[in-house]
Length: 120
Image (cartoon, rainbow, N blue to C red; front, top):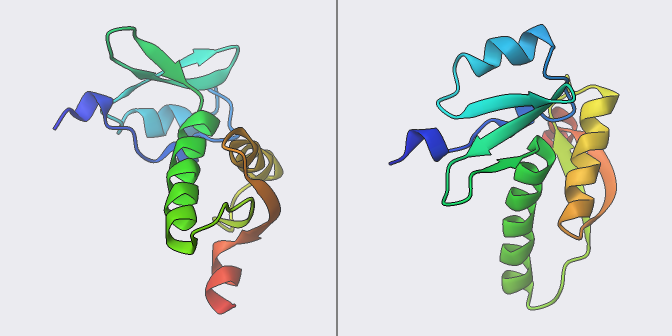
């Protein structure tokens, strides 16, 4: 396993500023590199052509895989989604999550809190 290229917990960075204390604290626990570009966290992935991704792009990759799985299971194209986020997410984090859905071609009908989704 290549820990330096294993990206996880992108939701801890999504919709946040690189300079935020929580982001700086979280970075101490990541095996991958996070850099700040215009005060936005960017995740570095080491490949032949070193790449950087926004947390929104990482989240959109996960949503795209989920969309493809749903397409295969249902036998038709999924276009709309209701996405859950942690209850503590700020408006900026919710908007960034909607942007991630848009990047992968999903129409985000609604963002709901994870505890609310569990009750439904």
